[in-house]
Structure formats: structure tokens, C-alpha cells
Image (cartoon, rainbow, N blue to C red; front, side, top):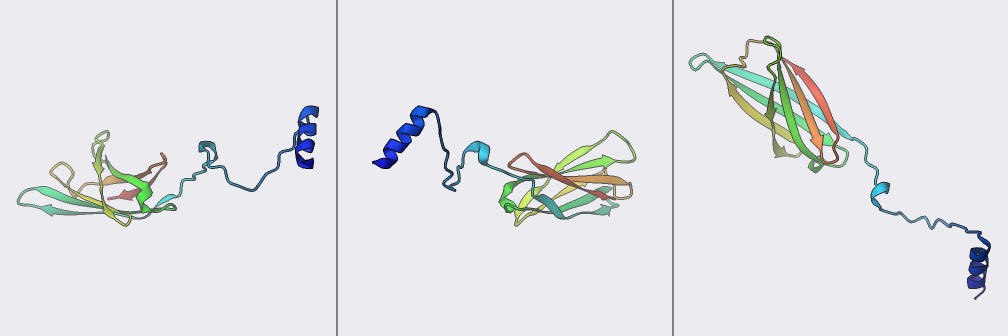
Length: 136
């Protein structure tokens, strides 16, 4: 009963005390996320078939997140053609599980004997991204 009278007295006089109970409020503004997203490995290999004149490219990325590999939703590779500037192409990698992303590309345009810059870009579900560069 004393506690009730004390609270009424403080409320009527305009004095308020806020007591933090140490609990955690999980409202949307309280959620903190940092970009813990990185490449452990990224590489490219290529083999040329002189009979068909096609180059078979293989793209591999090992991406990790501080919140687990399921936080990563996409990994792309942007091919920057150093011979003919302005002819970039994006290749989408497939999730093979455990942070491994990979794909292949058969092309007569991107041949193994020309220089390229490959920009690997990983995206997570919180809108963050990171990249890694590989030069061929």
C-alpha cells in the first residue's frame, strides 16, 4: 500500500523515475546488425576446346557470414572485359550449400586467352554486400 501512495505522490507532483529492469526490448529499432560478410575464397578456371572454339569457365566462391551461411542469398560475378571496355556481363552463381557458390559458363566471346577482371559480389538478407576481385 505504501508503494501505491508513493507512486501516486510522485505522479501528481510531476516527478517520474524510470527503473531499468535489465530486460531486452526486441522492437524493430533495437535490432542491430553489422555487415559480417566475407569471402574465404574466390577463383576462376578456364579450359579451351579448339574444336568447338568454346571456352568453358568455372566460377567458385566460398562466402561466410557471422550469422551463418543461410544469411547469404546471392553471389554474382561481373566479368569486366579488359579487351573491349564497356562489355561487362553478370553471371549468377548457385548455392551448393555450406557457403559454397559456383557455376559454369560456356562462351565463344569470353575466351581463355584474353585478360578479364572478375568481381565476385555476395549479398545477404539485410542488404549488405561484399566483393572480391580475381584477375585473369
